[in-house]
Every structure is written in structure tokens, then in C-alpha cells.
Length: 220
Image: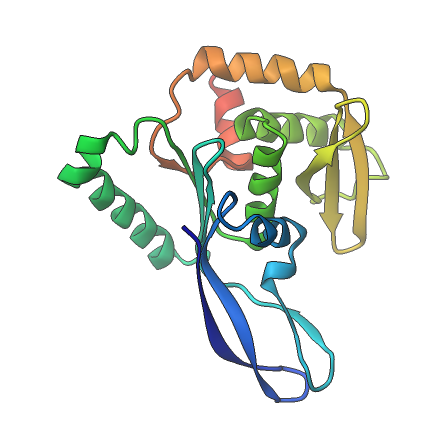
């Protein structure tokens, strides 16, 4: 199910206090419109009704993709929030009722600490891709283009969508702006096969990010 609540929020620009809808959880089947707003980022965007200034609002949110049996949890990037997320997950998985219904057996669980990563995970699921292979691909593309002036050093990379040839469109974001590039599907497919061979089981609440990708490739 999806859960939402309305809260007061003060505009940092003019100080006006307005109302803003916070989604504690978004189910892509129950609330497809909210799921699309999560992907495009507007679910976290507050527009002040007084001055019109727009600001991104970071709040904890659970994205539930029922079609692909994946849950992605967004928390703040503090050590306390991350530890609490893992503790809550462990307690849930130890619950007798949860064990009895086999809830955890077919589900994948992800943890992210920023809105863009949550949006990216939802986009990857929408396009029926493996986020592990996508993370490996992003790391390799960045490494191969380390001397490419078009991709700024230190850029953060995000998956966006599939192009008309089923290639993967990546966006590279830095303080200088953002640039996009398409990566051939063949590269993704080979990495997806590698992941399935080396990591056939995908269990537990996990960070699947650039650090995970680096450690995965370092083990080869």
C-alpha cells in the first residue's frame, strides 16, 4: 500500500508556511501516478504558493515495486539513520509471521541515501534492468572516459532511461552541469550475465552503488 501525510513546511525564500504532502511509502501498482512523480522528482519538490520558489524536500520514503518484487528505502545519509534501517529490516525478517508467509524469499531490498539514487532505482526497475549490472556499467564507463573533457572529473552518474535502440542512457552530473550519453545494450547484457553467474542470490537489505561495484570488480 501507499501512505502519505500532509505537513507544514516553511519556504526558505519568503518564510511563508504552506502545506506539503509527504509520501511515507509509494506502491507503483496502487499509486502509479505517485510512482511516476517519484521518478521525475516532483514528489520531493515543494513550490511555495506565496512566492513560487521551488525547493527539494528530502524525507524518508519506501518505494515498493510490486511488479518486480523490489523495495527501495530512502533514508538520510547519517550513520544513525542507516543503522536504524538495517536494524528494522533484521527485526522484520526475524518475525515469525514474516517467515511463515515467506515474504522475504522473493523480494530484493535496497537502501539509498539521496533522492536521485531513489529515482534511479525506480527507473531501472521500470525498464526491467538489474541495478547491479547498471552500477558496474556506470563505473566502467567513467573509468574509460577519465580523460574525456565532455565528462567532468568527479561527475556522479545516473541511469535515466532506454533509448530507441534499447541502449542505456546515462547522465553525468557535476557542479558544471549535466551531460548525457548512451551505452550500447551489449555491454549491459554481458555485465548482467556476469552478475548472475557470480551472485545468483540477491538477499538482504543492501547498498548497490559505486562502492559495491568497485568491490565487485576488485574481487575478479
